[in-house]
Length: 177
Image 1 (cartoon, rainbow, N blue to C red):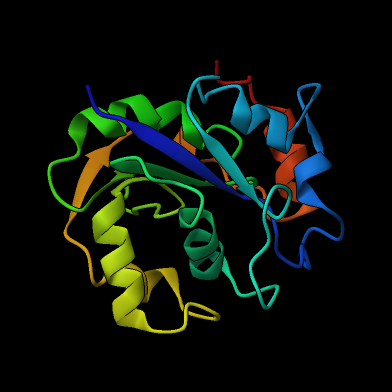
Image 2 (cartoon, rainbow, N blue to C red):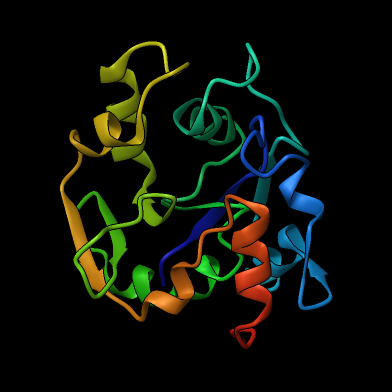
């Protein structure tokens, strides 16, 4: 059995959204609550931007992941962003599929989503160390240092809410359960 923990990235400036996305409501639940409904209660979950904070603040997703990793010692780490309310629904599938450093969902167009992936903790730590200071580093640069298994998925699970218009659009779609 593969042991795993989860990092939920909930910080950021929320510039395009205009307010704290984590508390925006989608189908009667906050975006954070939507994410957490797909993570089993027994799985250690660290919410970066709520439970822990990166120093200096606003360092981006790689800095948030680096900070979250300080709280985790499991073999595998699931990473998701709070603005992807259904991404965590894919974690069991990705955990089954991982063979290399990471498993990421790919939509019908082949776009992979690194902020909805399962990573080997040791591989993620090694890649972050190679990058140096994680503040301001891109997810693309991090992923370039990993061997990634691409897992085809239904793109509805990869909905990404960056703007109020995205939230309105998501409200008109059925909730993924």
